[in-house]
Image (cartoon, rainbow, N blue to C red; front, side, top):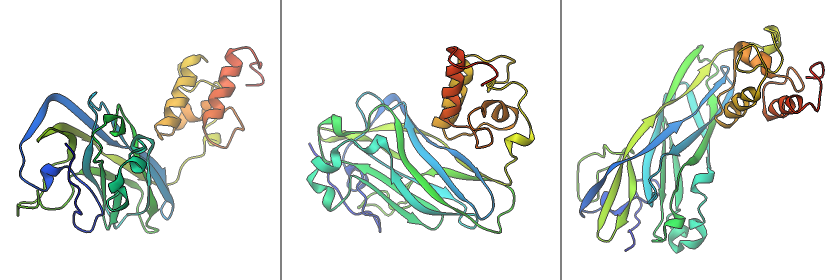
Length: 275
């Protein structure tokens, strides 16, 4: 069976048919999807960029999902939403309905970003699987923003529960259609943050041991792992860890090239003095 796509409000967005008509709904017991927003740090008047990711997607996959991001519009202005690798399943090309209601869709409203993924295709190879980056959002910080941290929360889309109801939606949807029944997963969320304030240069701290990114007093393969995780999760190292990790082109910040240089040292391709 295939789901029916509809236009929800002003969003050219498709959601599971349980959201637009009264059909039987069941919940996948013990199966939970995690939706998380990343973190970034910038200055007032600067720009920010955070990833929205999913993990722990059950083996059946997600045929459709429907959620929103909520933030303080007096501090943040979202200007761009970029589709992530997780949603590049090939459904946009294979699903004929994509031309009228995109498989992946977003709408930026003041203080909110509405996000959906929905395909009519029954083949689960076109569904969201495992986990990864759902999308990336970018924007600017108000020039008069005070130093501090502001959050970006994952919330239900602000709309009616379905086409036959006057009740406001209060659920983040993620699931699939099985025969004539919609199956929904439990959804857990984790908010992201944008920290506003001057970033202290790593060179002003000074490295106590070059390459020691985990600050344990020695240079090991774990220091490489710490840097790679930091880069992949868009959570920059700070303080002494950042100062120690910045071994490649010192002063330009910590990136994957620093991890490569530490690996070269561990493989005896460069000396400690060269590190």
